[in-house]
Amino acid sequence: MATTQQRTIYTGTFIHCTDLSKTEILTNTSIGVDEHGKIAFITPVDTLSGTLKSHSWDPAEIRHFPPAPNSSKNISFFFPGFLDTHIHASQHPNAGIFGKSTLLSWLETYTFPLEYSLSDPRTAEAAYSTCIHTTLAHGTTTAAYYATISVESTDILARLCRELGQRAFVGRCAMDNADFQPSYYCDADADTAIKASRESAESILAADPTGLVKPIITPRFALSCTEESLKGLASIAADLKIPIQTHISENLDEVALVARTFPGYSSYAHLYHNCGLLGPNTVLAHACHLSQEEVSLIHTTGSSISHCPASNTSLGSGLCPVRELLDQGVKVGLGTDVSGGYSPSILVAAREAGAVSRLRTAPGVETGIHSLSGKSLITTIATTTDNESSATTSEKQARDKLKLTVEETLYLATRGGAQCLGLEACVGGFEVGKEWDAQFIDLGAEIDAGYVLGGGSVGNVQVWKGMEWEERLAKWVYQGDERNVKAVWVRGRMVVDKVAVRA
Ligand code: GUN
Ligand code: FE
Image (cartoon, rainbow, N blue to C red; front, side, top):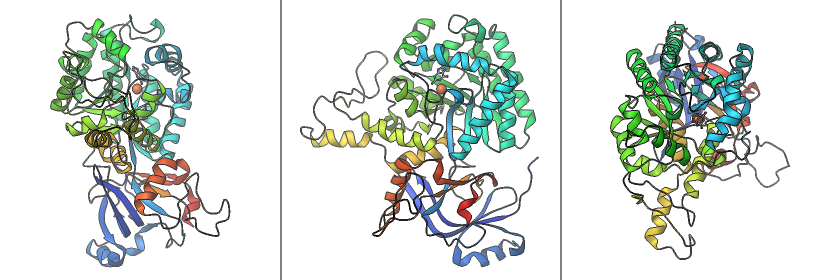
């Protein structure tokens, strides 16, 4: 059951994204978090004592963060915890290792052998505990995890999330297509895949009445499954009222193989739809090569997309048309996709999302969304000329529109992810009634004339005197790392505490 905690007042600067392109900065503010880990009030520091009285909070029983008035001159702020909408906890040991492979060879060479090794509970425990510690230290308060085919090791991942305090969706990988994956790492048949997935989901549900750690039905991707298992998995999700995650349209070889393996369907998304897998609680990772018809289907079913830019560049998979998805009202969040992606950090995913969106505007890059019937680009930004010199004004505007701003990538990292995972009423921003899933960020001291090398900066971030918040946030996104994350809370519980900042 939910444990109660000491009421806590957080004081300082709070930054969150109120809209796709809007960031709110609340300075000299206090947020009160109640005994259930929920935000009870947000108030200017000046009016705190009156607010405490009106809420009948006894000042003698309240904890403070920072514990004493913050005398540090460092630039610091509270930010909502990040949501990683797509990460393979089971691939954490391989992060950074992918050679020159692309998706299908990478699965065979690197991924299936590693995941199989986690059938050993001690290996699973080591991989999963390091994954959770690492992602929490990077500010990830919610993760949608893929585990492995093993029910036992999937249970270990869920238990470790509960113990270490990370909000999570944990999915046992279902994979029963013997033609696609090796016999040593494959469900015996559809019935086994369905039964083992139900057993895993029920076990995770029963173990956490607080709902912090939930199961998620996880058909690995179309090629890993048969139609029978895809349909059976969809009915478990409906029956247990739990979400679904899978991959879609990541790489062109994969898309072609899906079309050959499932010839009765007009597209990858239509296959999933016909098997009952699309809906408002379904998260689809990648979506680099969708047709317009598929985007429309994803939109009308309320399914969402996990954009995994670091994975897409590492495996050379493609360039997800994020702007077009957002313009069409599709929910989009960010995923690290470890270990297709090399980094466990959603801050890096935000950075790479910005970079990929700019790469889409490079001369010669054909990017956009195709129609299903032909190969005509419906949104066309194919350029052959140099960006700056010969483009017309409208071409330049069209290219600039594709670029995601720092604020937009931070929105996707927080509120966007919360929408994908059905948590928008609960986390992703600072509002009364939301749960306190937050990170405390320290950007170090401002650099000015007379600066002595090494003095005051934190990690790689160097903030110069006179920079506005907009520039400081850009510094954080493009230069920051886990050294800037000084504390992390999930549902009010402090789960990372690098105490040094508190002095
Ligand atoms: N498609 C099927 N399995 C995987 C996986 O483990 N990672 C990625 N990125 N794509 C996949
Ligand atoms: Fe993945």
